[in-house]
Each structure stands twice: as structure tokens, then as C-alpha cells.
Length: 277
Ligand SMILES: NC(=O)c1ccc[n+]([C@@H]2O[C@H](COP(=O)([O-])OP(=O)(O)OC[C@H]3O[C@@H](n4cnc5c(N)ncnc54)[C@H](OP(=O)(O)O)[C@@H]3O)[C@@H](O)[C@H]2O)c1
Image 1: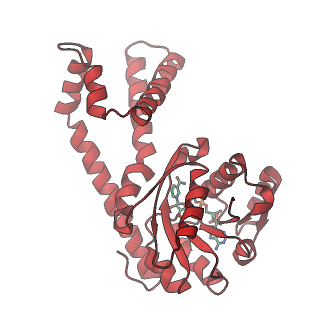
Image 2: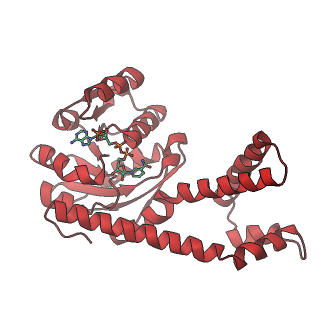
Image 3: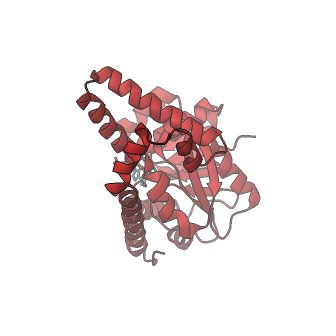
């Protein structure tokens, strides 16, 4: 059975999640939204047919899964609003980047809390969400959280200490791929391809390669070996990329994103009086 869901914070990700749940068969009656801007609330109710409250307590009332989708800086304020109204049967799923479970557990006491990190391919039901359960989460609650996030893609359970790395790899990951797409499109145009053809070649290459990676059991090394003939074009191109530090640049970028996520978590912990991880 599909758990009822409240989405607190009806911004970009909140809307994506609500849309995904509706596509996955949730009834609008089993969902609720909360946002602090009246016009945003009415716009979403009109578009999605889901009730939207200005008061997050009203949105959360009676819902099994309460998803927190506000910016990290707004989490302490939101917790202050809902802290006395979370019931034992409810599970709070935080999608706020970098905010530790300890911030929620301090504000909400014994409440079941799960920290998750999805990514924007949720818009086309191709997200990956990693999530970490807090201290008071039952198996049933964890299954409910999984079913909510599986509406927009795949899921994996990990320890909370790995969430900054997850943020850096898959949360931020789409931006790395967009940058690659931009660079490859520019390179294609430089080689004389018309823009529309360059975009089509790049988009479909990324989509097809992603599908191969996800759908075959082969590692990227094996898949790359399959397209690398001795003395051929791929070998020449990969040599240039390796020599230019492509691999090290990716590793440094991921390290920088993970460190930033850690700093944001510490700031959120400090703002709420709880030390970050
Ligand atoms: N977008 C992504 O790709 C992505 C991916 C993974 C995780 N996340 C996480 O998801 C969270 C939301 O991101 P977003 O991009 O969707 O942000 P967003 O577009 O700013 O949406 C947040 C919404 O929540 C509203 N809000 C803030 N405090 C509230 C309160 N107390 N009660 C009701 N509504 C409240 C905001 O109103 P105002 O406009 O007035 O501020 C805004 O409409 C962030 O913590 C982010 O780290 C995002």
C-alpha cells in the first residue's frame, strides 16, 4: 500500500517529488504540500490537484511520511514549527543537503527520521536516492521511505557518515555531466557540426552510455576497452584526457563538493545548537 505523504517545502525538488508520486500512482488525496508563499501554494494546487497549506503542521497532520524539502538554512525554523506535532506513526524524511540527523533528533526527540539525498533526474523518474536511517526508524518506516523515493528512481541505504560523499557524487553529479555535455557540444561545433546535430549527438551519446552502464553488468573499464582499438581514435583521445588531468580533476571536484557539504552540515548543526558530523 502506498503511504500518505506530506511534502514540506514546495520548491523545485518538492514539486518534482510530488509530480513523481502522482505519476507513480499516488492519489492527490494521499498527498499534501506546504509552502510559505501563498501564490506558490495556489499555483501548485492548480497544476497538480494536491492540497497545499501555508502551515506545515496542517500539511503533515495524519501523513505517514513527512518529507522536509526546504533549504538547509530553513530547516531549524521548520523544525521549530512542527516539533510538537510529529506523531509516533510518522517518519520524517529529510532531503536537505548536509543537514545531519542529529539536528532532527534533537528537535523531534524520539521521532523516526531518515536522511536522504536524491538528484534531479527525479524529474524523469531516473533519480538515485541514497538514504540513512536515524536511531528510531522501524523497518516498516524505512520501507515506506523507500517506496516514496522509488517513485522517482532507484534507492540505496548507506551509513549517514557517507552522505557528504553521496552529495558530492550523485547529488552534484548531474552538474558534472552537464559540463561535459557543454564541452563536447562546443567541441563538436568547432569540428564543423551544425549546432542542432551537435546537441543531438551529445545528448543521445550520454543517454545511451548511461543506459549501457546501468543495464549491463560490465564495468566502465570493460566498456571503454570495447570501444578502444589499438592505435585508434579513442586511444588517441583518452591519452589527451589522461595527460590533461581529467581523472584528477574529477577526484578534486568531488572532494571539494564533499567538503562543502560537510561545512554546510556543520553550519546547520551550529544554527540549531547541535554539532554537525
Ligand atoms: N534541487 C535539487 O537538485 C536538490 C537535490 C537534492 C537535494 N536537494 C535539497 O532539497 C532542498 C530544497 O531544494 P530546492 O531546490 O527545492 O529549494 P527551493 O526551490 O528553495 O524550495 C524550498 C521551498 O520551501 C519553502 N520554505 C522554506 N521554509 C519553509 C517553511 N518553514 N514552511 C513552508 N515552506 C518553506 C521555500 O519558500 P521561499 O521561496 O520563500 O524560500 C521554497 O518554496 C534543499 O535542502 C536541497 O539541499 C535539492
